[in-house]
Length: 217
Image 1 (spheres, one colour):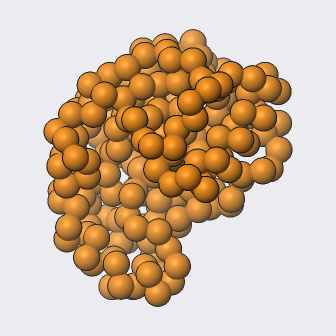
Image 2: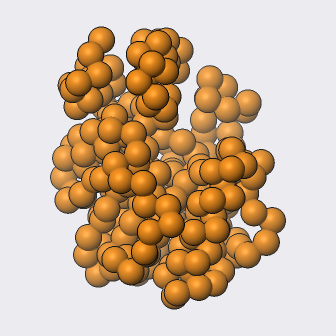
């Protein structure tokens, strides 16, 4: 396996699949966790790249996507940042809901490739970046969305602090979270919860109760 062509790797190791909570969107996803994880583990660890989180539609992203499609007024005509975009499901939903522009940001170049492929497959315009945006100015966006970011404490603390600053500046900031350990206990308003079908390969249950939260400024 070569790591020099992320787009080809994504195409060769995924196939179009429906998404349980968001049937309007079809994504290039892995059929099973173990094969793609084993395929990438050795070379990814040597190169310092993260595991193939982009190959799956995680519960937090599905919840965000469902919420945006059901409430398009939140992003209609707005500049949207999908932070830690993974497969890009939330970014695609924002674009479908009428966002003026959507930037999908993920430091993993394979995630950026997957997001671009999925956006093209769903016929929506999305820009991708692998820049680390945490701590940078959020003046370029009106809405910031992110899912499943609170699984590690240092990352969660750093990112949620940055998102709280954005909310204090008047940005609409939404987090999709299926009960991750390091989600902040304060500064959030619950908007909606969904029962999201998942797999025991990814989670410890077949269904995750997943909430969309608004970060308060």
